[in-house]
Image (tube, rainbow, N blue to C red; front, side, top):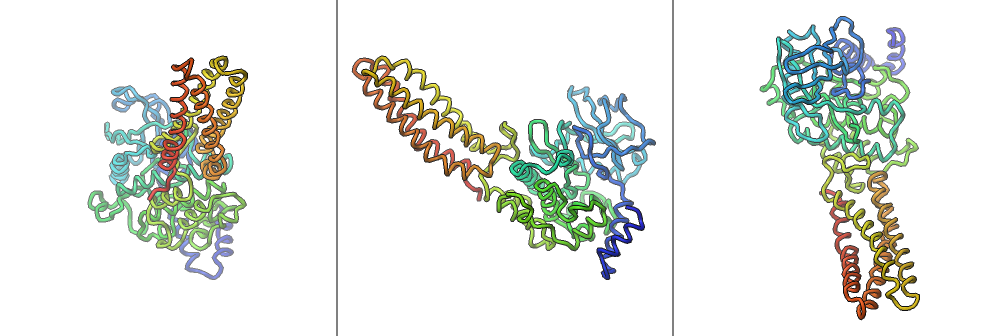
Length: 489
């Protein structure tokens, strides 16, 4: 926005509040003067750290060159302070991403220390939802971070297609909260969470990227471990996703990351920024974050679960004390209001998914397979049963098997694709599944008794299967369901 339009906007939005106008103007100026790795949005698939693709013609492209053991293949992205490249590690024969300081910063001790600190903090985070740092290396004064290369799309790229489907938005938000919680538990704050810094891999998992502005939760430890890298009151990061206390240059803690999570979750569900839905100018965003309340999610015309609406609303509170204290509290609140689910899902078992949930899903598939398989011996033993009973038993067993199998596969599918509908679907289907199971048990029992006199081996097999079905239906399946979907304490 040009200066005249910006002045007009600030005059309109701030009215007679000169203190607010001065504060917003200074924040915009600070943001425009800052130079961060994170300035530009990511546009390249596979971008490891949310770097932008802004063109800096003066910066040499290292593609085709070798840095130590790393053969640089191509550029992935470029930002205000540095560049990310795709490279091949000759020592371990693997593809990696390397983050390199822009040439004008290679001898800057502050920027070099900031890169070192990013590597140290991120390397201490071992969690499937956080990009892995492999090494911090220095070759001929060139300092680089070596990290895993992630193929996929940033959430910014996904949002370019519109808001995510409700179930996908909620599952993605939960995955981000769980990854943030893992960082917080290790004492690390991200401080620059935004759609550009979160990727969905090709297999559907969520990865948080770029800890370039991260710091330790305990500021006294943080300042003892590393030199002071910013002047008091300096604004680092992306204003559009900053908590009010960050924008004002005040002390912040894990609740600033929680605020950013709320902004991101809101945007994933609605496709709009929470505080400036129709205006992306920095001034409008900052005024909105500092002074306005977001449009209520409950009024957004979306069928969002109450638990999701509640935790997002509380996370966006301007009063720090009104927000959830940590990302772990956010994740727990989401799980309490819905079936316990893996952090991300796309038709496969997600990394980090609870074993109990995986076992419940396996039980549904295994039971369905065994039930359908039982139709083969029941068909073969038809002639051994009296008169027309063989055909009657087979038809009744077929009906019971189809009913139980279709409903179990429906619940399995719901748990993956429509997780927040699972409880309602189970409530309507479980009675029918149990009835079908009991019918099958009764048919198997009667068939076994009828075969005992002349075909004792077949009879024993059929009765044994009937007992197994009864135990699985009345004891094993209820136990796996309780374990997989109980709320976490």
